[in-house]
Image (cartoon, rainbow over all chains, first blue to last red; front, top):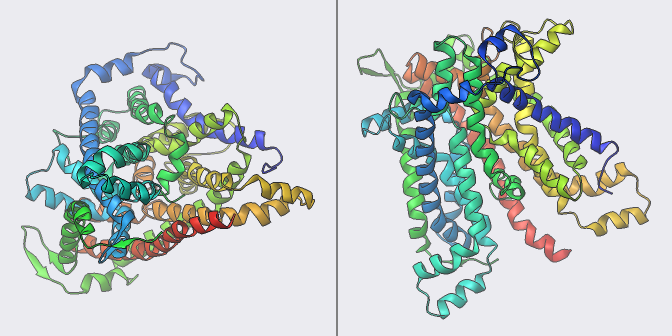
Length: 268
Length: 300
């Protein structure tokens, strides 16, 4: 009943539109540079793993992935760690300035990264964290902590208050209640929040690029620099791009029912 | 749900406050400080009062002209992508299969562009659109269109817009789909008994049920498109000329390219203020969605 005429055709066309550019990237990543430049082929006629091999053996390339993963993981752990108690606080209690604080968090989630690029550069240079994964991890907290708080607040609010009260009557202390009862109950919510923290930190380029120069350079920055410097090694660029899509593609299946919720900050 | 008043809850919120304040308030104070000063390098600063702000809002100056032009471009860009993505997202959500394994497959493919790093989105379209090696550019050119996003302004805009539609329409579709799924079957049965047409079902049942989700989608898309930086930067670099230089790109050019701290800071503050106003609207909508939900369930 809630369908429209020609829906199969519409959804198929749209999915093809989504997949075609990605297919082209994958296609390019298996081609040699001479094949890319000299001929227009819809699939690789001389498939090669050379591009991938170079990324996995050249340290300046694979270190980019390690750097990215490092700050993304640090950021996810910090974000979830501080957001969990706060989400519980916002969900269960009313306190002085709670609504303003909640709004302030949201406004930081929405703040343009371009505004913070320069002050962050000064701030992290001043405390000697520039060009370390910690600088990027802390900088990404500005949008990921609010995101985690908003998502987790939605999940904690789904847990009935009676459970808290029963636990406290049974003599659970607050930390023990938190670890033994609340966290297992909202485990899926924590998974979703962690996934989105991971994702938003992983896809961000501007801050990550501004706050690193040599030692902690993320893969996204290495990709942009190679394009301009070493001529046009399209196959290598495509292979690097494909590798950055993989983390998202791997876990997407598990969060497929929560994607709308995560992007709408837990409010759908 | 009645919440109990408990000031000790501040202790639960304190870590979040500390972390976000460190990354938000300190840098913002720096920005406010810079916005009132001028510098000629060597870390020498001079008091400039509200001079930068005056210049910023005056289109006859260089700074004002650049800011207002990029703001205009950005608003036009946001308007165009909203006009395309919202209707398209609704249509895609309505076209989703209802049950079976195809639902999961559709959801996964829809979500895929959302999870790709933004610079890789740029790279994908940079490659895809090139006339010499990209499928899109090659096909268009062999069909007789003189398509080249590097040299032609219109083509650059078209590429950036199609890229954004590709990247973010799924978000609108997924949010609408979530809204549609919450409609009980009884509504459709009632409509069937009344002999309602498809259009009537859409207008009287589906659209009203979706309107909150849609509002969230529109606001999210507006905010994100208003702050867009990475994708157009990778594809067009803001060019040809300045034709795809949006506010964020202009800001980064002034701040990190020219190190014009005062100008950049003043621009940042005005930019942030616009975002803050939209954000407040967004907050009101979001929190209302939360409070109205239990009431709806109680009534149904």
